[in-house]
Image: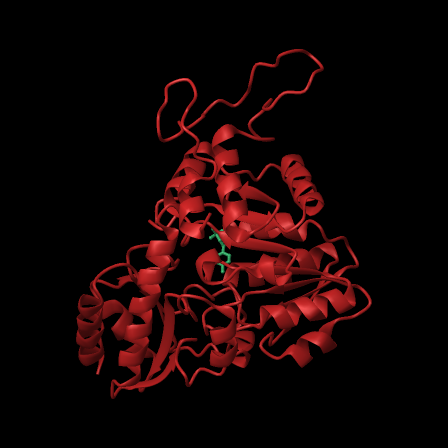
Length: 382
Ligand SMILES: *Cc1c(COP(=O)(O)O)cnc(C)c1O
């Protein structure tokens, strides 16, 4: 079956007791056992619950993996995957990555004796030369954040295989609609389900999907041992969210492409970062690697100082001033002081996140209304 059909039907069998078309939310924390020692589908909700399993089943299908494990947040998923590492191991990651992942890698893992190297993962030679004898994991974002750099997933698969290390892709921005790293040979994909999967700014969740069952079992074992599971209500909302994932991501990406073009023609705008623009340095890789669009995130810089950028983000009305992304509501923010405040200022500037960079998460509103909103804010900030 095709993606859109699986998104609606996998894990969503009608409830056998009532016939309800939408399976109910199972809130129970514990389950009656058929015998003291025999096997049971469910025993305790940290280990597994029907509602969480429904979401895990559909997400594994959409990403093309053997097993999905749903977590309390995207960071819990990220942490759950890095629990595969031991003291003395080395992790290679990108410079254009989610601010919270940057903090976990550089501040938390480093204290636990796991060393981290951040390199420009759009440069495959730089990735290859960062790998050492102790390297165990390469962590990439196919669409980076906030500069929307494009990392070549197939190129990283080849490097990881040569080195015998795990390749993990945080696919939150691309979603399995546009990009499926497991099909290209990555070992694990993670998503912040808070973003496009939930899609409506009303839940916090994360999910990791493993290409092979053994690795999935190990992730589930670690999760059960440490406890960061997705709750039943969030699991239900994620099942509901994925049913419209393809429609939303395609529509939001089309609007983002239009706004990126339009921004490039505005007199006060000096730089636009969007993988769908021919001028983007990763455009050729993006054309090969993404299907159906180039994502719904756009970032840009304007002429003038940081105060002018601040005025733009404070002047928009439809684009609401907030961190996060991926929902039906459009959002606007300043990464240097908001989403990427966890980077030390020197590190942030060194990787190209300027103080005046503006990031948009393009929602599902009409493109013309969003364009008018930006036009008014740019004029007011002028
Ligand atoms: C938001 C985000 C995360 C973290 O997810 P939470 O649900 O906020 O914990 C990780 N990676 C990326 C790319 C994100 O955008």
